[in-house]
Length: 286
Image (cartoon, rainbow, N blue to C red):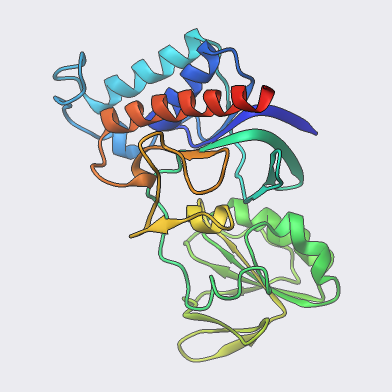
């Protein structure tokens, strides 16, 4: 199991800025994200409000970001973080079949989360989960519904089918599906996850599918779902001027903490979040 000083979730301007400053301050860290920057950056035709980079395109700015982190030997781990739990002296990060530990975390997840399903948040931990490979053993010989928003979800559904008595796969995208023969594909939009104290079905427009568990596999999930107990305000993570959240050792930066949604603002907040995390870590060492 790998333990680092700081885990950074997100590889946009905020996350990369935080990584740069963690590197400069000689802290061990890991960055979870994607080596291909978001279209929100690369598709911008001209940027005039980023100090020192007047009149550049989004693609040019993205290349500068990549060159900078590469020059400092900063690597991006392309794995999806499913849950983060505050364990007192450290945070446990659940990443598919692995777990990482960090003394502090910086959330820089952006604002690309889709709307949750009716009943999803209410039944989280009561049959609703976000990591099929983590929790599949809980549903041995039971009926499971996997709601997949991308091709990667198919691999998780195939794994679940080895343990569950039946797997329904709800495809939220159009493509050829690489699924095992015993998995039933549902081409319909789910409206609600049903259940009182635990999940018992998924409701569609014209039918309900009985299910003991539901895995919702999106590209990303909301910070409030990612980190139980995290205080949110108007759909954003609530932070103070040091980018600290209500959870000790947890900091946040960028679009996920609120407007304005601008690259230079995100980069500045990533800088502050990293410096605050370093200060927090130094306090633990005393």
